[in-house]
Length: 163
Image 1 (tube, helix red, strand yellow):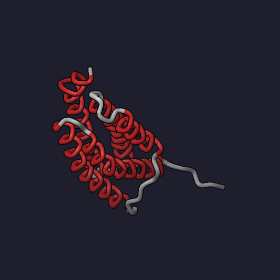
Image 2 (cartoon, one colour):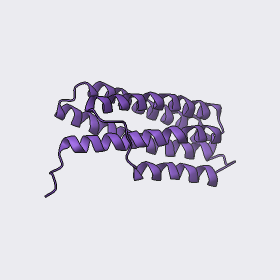
Image 3 (cartoon, helix red, strand yellow):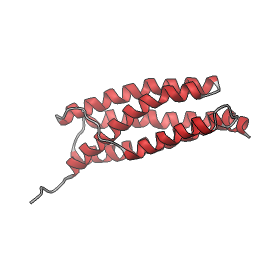
């Protein structure tokens, strides 16, 4: 008879998911920076690459708190979102709409991450993982800040240029 899965199992599974996602995002951001046409867009993607490295390190601390090795689990959602950004880079290359498309795909990724970190914080609180909560909250705060920066960049420059 299989053992019953618990919230602890779900928490670990989701940490593995977001760890994998962050690693994939870390690989994708330099490509997006190279593709971006505006200097602001390039700088934004490179800054978020640096933040993502810190987020990965904090997730590794969460694994340590759990007494588990840092290991990702394939995340189909993030693969799809990154795939969409690659399609935009190909289909809109040399287009005035390229940066608007890149920002849009980056925000889809941010929203996925925001949802995951919000859930993990709630579960960590429920499970009494008090040392994991501030690490996850810091990652969430950075994701929310990046989303706001991307919105500002889109509305003040990229969307205007694309129109």
